[in-house]
Length: 207
Image 1 (cartoon, helix red, strand yellow):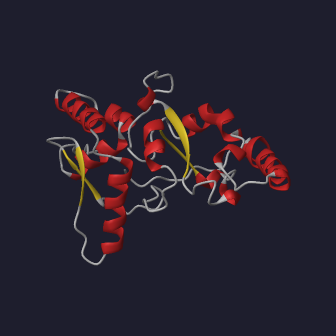
Image 2 (cartoon, helix red, strand yellow):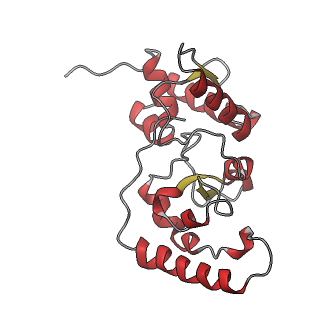
């Protein structure tokens, strides 16, 4: 995970998602007789998954890895996460600033957790990549214990060190070290690119 810049709200969002969502939710609130649940939210955002995917260049906000939009393997599929869980924060269910492009498996792991770090607010270089096994680790930053604990919770909750993710990172690192292109790595795995650059494995080209 590396710091993510929230993209500007696209022109289609207000009419296509926000206004439809608010109208739908108002109707639900008038009619429901049970506690608010996920099923009460119509997924207008899903109609624009391809557009959101393109805006964020197909990169998962939490893993920093590229997602193949047409991938058929379930845990590699693209998903739209509500960073603030919609059931707990209904006013954020149809807000652009609350959407994060991510792997479907990561979205599932996150669930309704509110204890993980938002990639929009994570400090630079808090997470460290072990290039030997592809695992994500924490740096020590004295005086930032709250951030460190939140980062630890993020790694554990999202399972950022699952076998599959470590294998993918290791494969990409190996491919780069065998002559891969740094621009391609930056596109496919910006977290790995940032980590390898930090460790001096990727050198800045002199002008």
